[in-house]
Image (cartoon, rainbow, N blue to C red; front, side):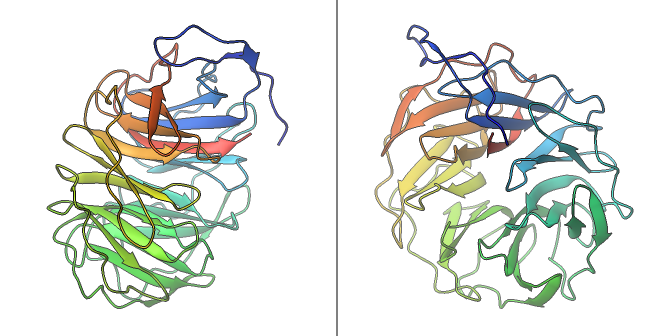
Amino acid sequence: MSVIGSNILAGASGGSAGSAIDAVYNLALAHYNSPYITVYPWGSGFGTKYADPSTLPTSNGRRCAFSPNGSDLAVGHSSSPYISVYPFSSGFGSKYSNPSTLPAGTGYGVTFHPDGDVIAVAHDGSPYIAAYSWSSGFGSKYSNPSTLPAGRGYGVAFHPDGDEIAVAHILSPNITAYRWSSGFGSKRSNPAQALPYHGSDVSFSPDGSDIAIAHDNSPYVSVYPYSSGFGTKYSNPSTLPPSNANGVVFSPDGANVAVTHFNSPYISVYPWSSGFGTKYSNPSTLPTGSGYRAAWSPDGADIAVGHSKSPYITVYAWSSGFGTKYSNPASLPPNSVRGVSWSTI
C-alpha cells in the first residue's frame, strides 16, 4: 500500500508541536457510541481522523482488527450482523456484504488468519466461535468445531504459524484451543493448571511458543508454553495486575507482555522471557479509566491503550518502559474504546 503524506504534527503531551511528517501507520479504535469505529493516520502522533464509513456498524464497537496486509478492517459489534468489514486504503471503502450465515450474537473478538484468508469471530450465543473464508469478502462459514467452547467467546487468536486457533470464553475451562487446517480440527487438551474464572482475551507470542490469557479473578493473567497444546503454566508475576483483566498482548518482538485491567493503573506491562520479569513502572500520566485493550505499533515504538473515560485512547512512546504520553487526537472517540488495532500504511 502506498504511503500517505498526512501532514501530521509530531509532539508529546505538554510539548510543542514538531514539523510535518508522513504517516506510517493507521490506528483503528472500536468504541461505544456512533460512529462505533474511528481510524487515524499515525506518525509520531495522531493525524486528522479519517472520514467515517458511509455504512456504519450497527451498534457499539467491541473489537477491531486490520487484515495482515492492512487492506481490510473488521469491526465486531453488539447488534446484527455482529461483524462489519470494510476495505481500507487512505480511508474506508464500501462495506462488504454480510456473511450469509451470521455470528450468533455480539462480536466480542475478531481476528484474521496470518495468511489473510480466514476471519474468525468470538461471539455471544452458541457456537461461540465462527470462522469464514475471506477473499475481499466473506466466503462460506466453516463447520463448527466438534467440541464447542463452553460459553460466550470474548477473545480469539490464531497461532502465528496459522495451524492453531484459541478462544477465550466464559465458563470452565475458560480457554479452548483447536488445531486449524482449512477448518477446525481436534480440540487440544485443557491446560493442567486451570484458569480461575472467565477468559476475556488471548494472545500468542510472536514466535508462537507461548500463549497468554487475560481473565477474571487472581492472578488475572496466565501464560503457558505452547507447542501443539498447553504446557505447564509459568509462575505468576511477582506484582499482579490489581483487578480483572480485559486484554493481553505481546510486543512485536515478544520481549514484553501488556495486560489491561479495570482498576488503576489500568495497564500493567512486564518484560517477558519464558516467564514474567519485574513489572515496568507505571506511566507518569495514567489512562483515565478502566483499560480495555492495548496494542503496540508494528515497530514496537508506541503502545496504545483503549479505556473507559475521556480521552478514551492514550498512546505512549515505548522503549524498555513507558515514555511520554502523546497529545490526544484533535477529534476524540465519543465513548469508551474497547478495541485497538494498528496497521502499516
